[in-house]
Length: 537
Image (cartoon, rainbow, N blue to C red; front, side):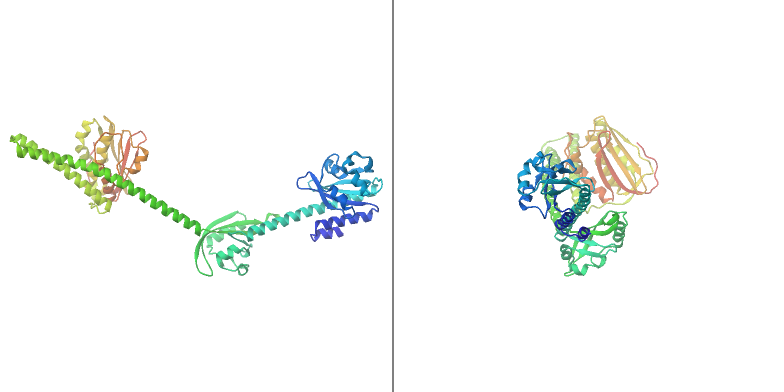
């Protein structure tokens, strides 16, 4: 009973083992006993308890290696069964320890393995005599009982050691954790709070214990409902972000809060663990990184625009110089040569063509500048898409014929959009003209329009080589011009201007590569209503 009392009140393991040995020695006059414990490696035995044995002998056998010839104890641990040596003087298993045993007055040794509940050897119980001795039936029964008690004591000691270690680990992890941590009861009230959480909330830990969760953290009803789901086992954890208010100085800080279930006996919910991570530094770092990225992006865009503007100005200057040279040349002819009437009329016609081209370039440049500034003026009226597309096909017929390109325009006569008629024609002239010039010679250009509830989608598709994927995002970028494999001249304002015009009319223009090859431009505009007659090409 004394042994069980010591185990129940979690006495030191050595005290419990000493009591077991003392009880047995009182029942077996002339016997001296010891308990050795298997070490963490499982390969050796270390001292557990032996109040009656000489210190010199205990030092000699402490750390004995388990094996087939390691005295009574080392051999019993090796075999997993009792080893009885009536006289150590003539037993070869005692050769390594015979001298020290004889010097200590130990002649007979009987050792039994101590097994845990899993039937693994965790130690040995040895009974020594100072004369040759063989155990009686009564002695065997006594040793069996005390060995069982020793097994309980060792297992209890192991569990208590693990519990102590676990408690210390929890204390270190909980109390010394730089992140906020707390334990909540099943009533969602604080049971334990670490110092980091106290600093974060601005409330002393002692005042928070027993307080409801919502008095410290601004937990909304939906989040508290999810915490209840954790408690009933339907969720293992809940992660949410909150904006906390420091109780002392009123400062606010974003935090990430994790509520997780802690199970107790019988695997039933016992607590809710609360982990709080301050996101202030992380958010500041993210904001700083985003600002750096934004500044870097702005710098690259500015550099790209600067280079593109230089290239564009060079192209536009070429477009302006050519008609100016024509105007100057034919003006000199008119002023220096005596031309016939037909020659004079032809020279004036060339001057008019050059002047019209020059005016077109200047107008496009001005429109692009207005579009980029967001001040491009457009009208808004119901416009029949088929009619505008038909006029565009007519205007580009000569160019299409020169490249032997077929234009297939088939649009229902009832399809209308709300836009500026002239500007829509200008957009389609640019897009269809590009499709003719950059598509395949002797190819096909298709113009289609699809109507939805509130918008009309106009698509222009060619069967040329398409556009490189890395160039697609640049097609409508102000002052940027995508390189193509075509040898067609141009100053690169058409698509920029088209994008601005469509945006000014409340629509959107996009470009992509068609599944079968070639480019497809899509213009989406608000739908309109009007009465028209069928017009199809």
